[in-house]
Image (tube, rainbow, N blue to C red; front, side):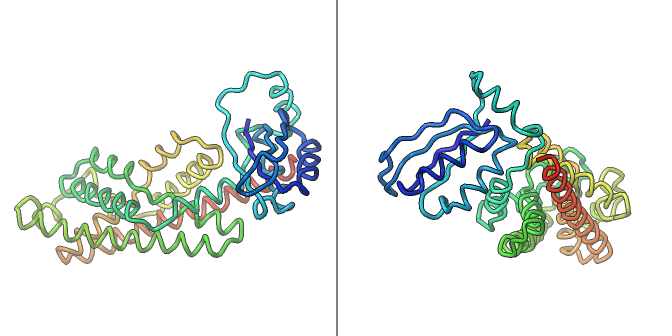
Length: 306
């Protein structure tokens, strides 16, 4: 169940109440007349089944409540109410299958912002992956994958394509490209420092690395894995399954490929740099394609179900 807290202009409250009452899957409606001060108006509270949430939010935005008042949505972790059980039973479909498009757009917008924190996480993940590829240590590679925040902009691009939101698409693409560029430059500098300290050597880069050689040898399986990871990651976002998203993070070699490319460039090994770049592009492209197709499929089947 979702809990909605609305601030509505007094002349719109009746319309809002009528919309809530006619939406299947709503319950626990309460109206606090004149309770709002900034902006002035009434406070309307209600609970709605997740599977009916997108329809209700779309109706509220059509009434202009997001512009003249406010719409706040919270997840209800526990609701002990027969009315809530009845509302969930009446709402079409299953809550786990429902997509809250407004929430998805807002979440991906936040996660696809180029910020100091985002670049710091990506740079640290890339440096950690650089240590992993030079030491041929799979554990460090997995750790770097888990730290990397790059799935946010990738999900933002997929969402923007499906929702036809060019501003979100450009914002996500900029965060993705600028973030990886900054992380790779910092990792190249990190590699030079460790080389000066004798911790990295050219021989380590050129040595046989059975555990991490796949990072600079892209093939069709790389693209297949990226597609599967993109599907799982998109489903984890739309269903709010964060555990699944962590699993996606450690299944795709985006950060390790960027790290190997940066280290290879620092040693002027253009062959490995090119192979790693190919691996990076294949994974990024596969995730975006899978994300778009997954969201389109969810949108199609959910519309038919409703």
